[in-house]
Image 1 (cartoon, rainbow, N blue to C red):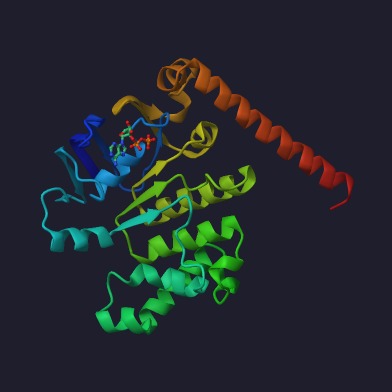
Image 2: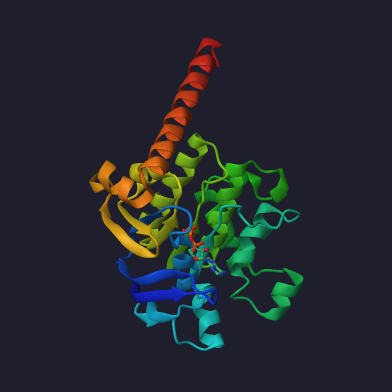
Length: 273
Ligand code: ADP
């Protein structure tokens, strides 16, 4: 379980990015974090693993506080937090397998990480994870030879190789087409359910969040303005979170994506593909 209590962040510039944010995410629950640019979504995610130091308030994971820990304990706790990024953050010239194994780096000794000679247990784990994300047969390919969707699957397998207690996911589908985005989102949701993992997903695509997330939290100007199930997230609340103009533009964009996809499918059907 992840627990934030009265989390506040004021940057040195005086920007108050988070104001008294409290929330709990139980095991196995995936929360979609939505809100306009500048609402504080990235700050919230980064305060959880203390890449950004909160000004006040506390964060605890599985009952252990991460705020107030020294560097050594912080490092040990960060191992248990899997991060998945928009731009995948893979090492391009390494293979898929090596990228997944790099999720073990926090656990292995200096010599293993230096020589990259992992033990049989780590390799076995990496194969099982590659199988789970559908990349068993790509293990020896270089990361730069993969499609966007495959790269994000590697990113997911690498985060799972850390054997995390929590997943923090930052715009996982921002670089993907609509169909691949849905596949990746479905995979994330399934994996969290299978492993009873709590997750927070920073997601800019509201229709996608509504389709997949059990719970959505809306941030505006550093404060939670909505916290509830996707079907309670109506037009009024969305307009409150984003403002009328931005919300209408976003909705129109989603409709265009869908009709382009339908047209493409019809074209393929005509060609007998
Ligand atoms: P979001 O991810 O929702 O776009 P951010 O967390 O990036 O929002 O930003 C929230 C607020 O904090 C914004 O006003 C932004 O300008 C400010 N901010 C973010 N990072 C920094 C920083 N490193 N230094 C100063 N202000 C920052």
